[in-house]
Image 1: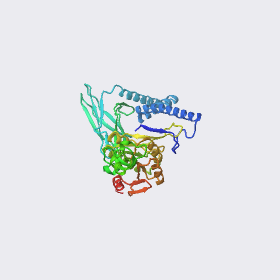
Image 2 (image 1 turned 90 degrees about the vertical axis):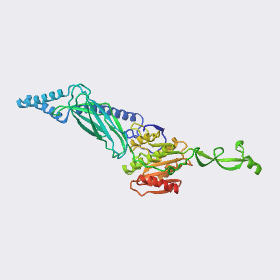
Image 3 (image 1 turned 60 degrees about the horizontal axis):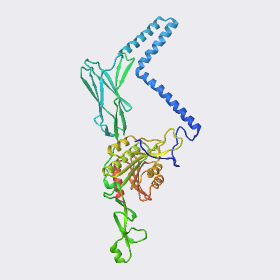
Length: 447
């Protein structure tokens, strides 16, 4: 979800860059250079520390401290016992290092039977350890990073050509993209002073899709047609006949209705209703200011997915956009929207699995303004937001769309009683549960 479809520097109210703020010129450049340099230096220090902390265990650090303190105090104060303890600690560290010598001859493979699941479904993963050598290999500990957690397995010793498989379950209680791997095998000394990790390059992503519901085709306001959906706009040339009117200079002669002309004695021309293909726009706010809590946001993402899947099933033209973030090093407010992939159902839900709330994202009013400029020929627009958005803000958002566009605001308020109200030409649907979306849309069509 990285494609930027529009990027303008219009005068909109948006959070400015957190680092630069209102500063400009050389002072802003100096701040950016200082922050970037600090980040590079800190990253190098952190990388070195991670390497050491991955090699030396907590017990190993303690043994190093004992060796240094014992040898210093022993030789400074002539304590023979301290010298013996210090060299014993050094010997243990040297022996632990010998245990880590040699290469790891295992072959490790990570597999996911399904890399796309719906939130709450079971998502198993498999780790296979194989011995490709001609000799028996000792057992090894296998670690698989799963999101922010860690799955650990103990592989037994394997003979020539043998393999061992372990199965683990990935938690899917929350929507998101869960990185799994890379798998690492761990060798350690018997005491546990040092450990050697071998990281295998294979790494997979598990897409935990938001929950969606089936929405009837007619509920989204679409008309099943081949040429297009008739509108109230009149035109001189189209396929949906409307009425006859008198000829005025500039009308095309091919539209003259000769039978009516003969009856009335004056030229009469055909008038048509303009038709257009149904184009659905779904705009999802990612601004934390538009939602009361995370539950409302998850409901909004599910509503966006349900509307998008319905449109793709009906083979309608679909555009799904979400708020974009202001870059950390931007010197001025940047307003843009990010396009969610609508190639197929899987790509749509993959992108929605990765969206997150942010303080610097565009709010629903500004999102509607930028989205209306970047998508032409919209016939119906859904604005998805939380309960923190007021009726005045929703009305201001709807005014950014041209006349003839049917604008529907879906306000997600977890646990609220579903309702339908009109704010001038805007339809406001309030849903408390995902199932309320289907009922509210049906009620709107009936009204």
